[in-house]
Length: 199
Image (cartoon, rainbow, N blue to C red; front, side, top):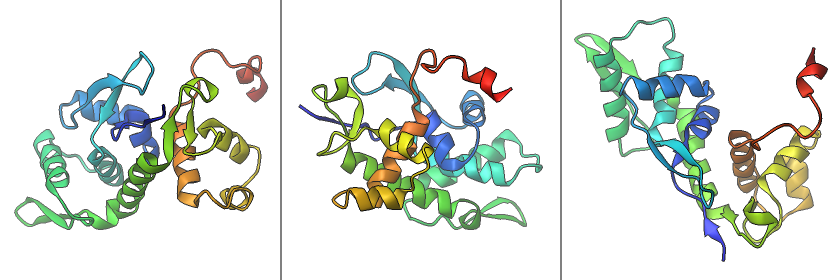
């Protein structure tokens, strides 16, 4: 029986979607600005930290404001403003009298990508213990998320994958790619010591 993926974002997914380092999102959690909770990763017994999807917009906004010193109170106001928004666009927030922060140019691209990723992940990525021992796959296929990443790293494009599998949408392949990048295999590298090759 296939199980659907969780609607939560792991810190690594949020980092990948926002284009910032995972450590930066972890720091926002440690400061008490972005809430995180530990939940089980699908059918695995390991726990992972998950954050609300708004963490992507917050991380991108703070990254865009690098170099501007903000007090914790101001950061919390930005978080609450983003979190309370029910629209696709965020608009402006008055941080202090006369100081407006227009969030749309800072976060609209990553926010749109996050919403599409979550919807596509729910719709197209599943885990079936009968297929590849429960590796995440594209629904209705035996194509694993890691195999999509492997083909892209091997030089193929998403367009070529869609051409090879016309029944699978570009968005489904993109979701599989984001998922695979955010969830690399655990354990030792299978191909010797790759860090020596880089030197």
